[in-house]
Length: 99
Ligand SMILES: [Zn+2]
Image 1: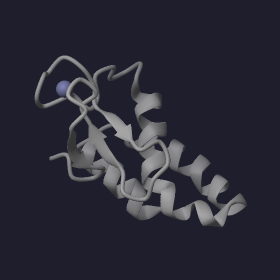
Image 2: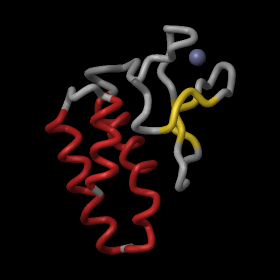
Image 3: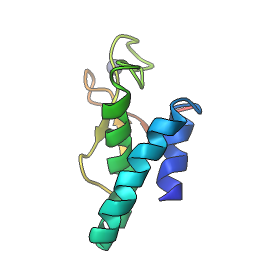
Image 4: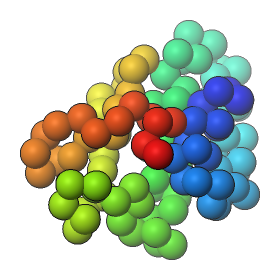
């Protein structure tokens, strides 16, 4: 869980820490119910946080290629999640390595 939280905070460059902590708290409960889900935590937390920051930061994380749309997490449920440009379909960076 800490690894997932750290990865998402790195990509947010330390912004919205309380919001990340709230999302992480919900995922902690979730992974207690489904321990096998542990390997998907980074993937899911990144999606949770993106959803949660949308009102504050609608373009986070901004695509470094086009500068006019946010990246999306792919796959929806995977162990090796990437930020992907949905215009080009190309992976930009693994979650936690955006900067
Ligand atoms: Zn793009």
